[in-house]
Image 1 (cartoon, rainbow over the protein chains, first blue to last red):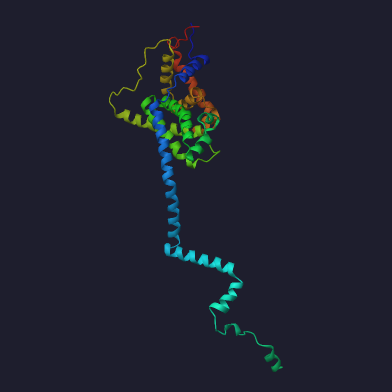
Image 2 (tube, one colour):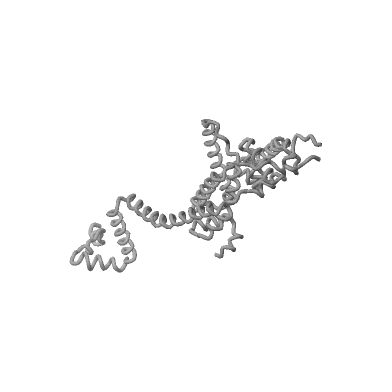
Length: 121
Length: 192
């Protein structure tokens, strides 16, 4: 008769093996619960995604001072783009034909003429 | 994608697909991972109903982390085992706290059939001996020798070094051997 104070390695392995074989399996009810949770998370994500986009837009608008500011910003942006594309031909048109019709603004001379310089000499 | 084709797909790829709303990925992950989680939690808690609750909770956390999952950082099973380990630890601590107040509350001894030379008797005896191990040793031994998880993965789950895992499992096995040595005959090992 053996008087071992410990199980042999092979005996312990046999116990582990028995335990592995007897591992509790998830019931069909549990699998259904887990699947239902997964389905709910997918549904939540679908609902949450558009809401998150709206939230970001709202946050941005409030950050710049509300909808009036946003409208002003949009107008300024569009005007800037238009001016950028319109120059140079249209600017002449604007200066001469639209806003300054009849004015003498285009005849103002900011530098001294050569005649006055010659006269002084 | 046909469901069978998902057998070859990694846990991580399935999780990312689930995070993008793929229902087949959810189904594949459920069938693949729920048994692992259930097995580990049932061994830790020795209570099927509680193990089922822990399993559902751990899987729910997995579904929720999916959209934010950072690929390549950790194995899905490592993350999951860690969640299960923490959930089980919480429950066991709560149980112990309640047990201190309880009067003569018998511990849930799953009514083991009489010890015979059967597999049931071996499983039962091992479970009992496991419960007497310090918690960390028990976790390491279950993961290594019953769930078949590798030492490096256990190290990641338990947030310790591989050497520490080896030390825990070695001490755990020795303690189990000693505790069960007196029951050799009952366990069907007989006399040599």
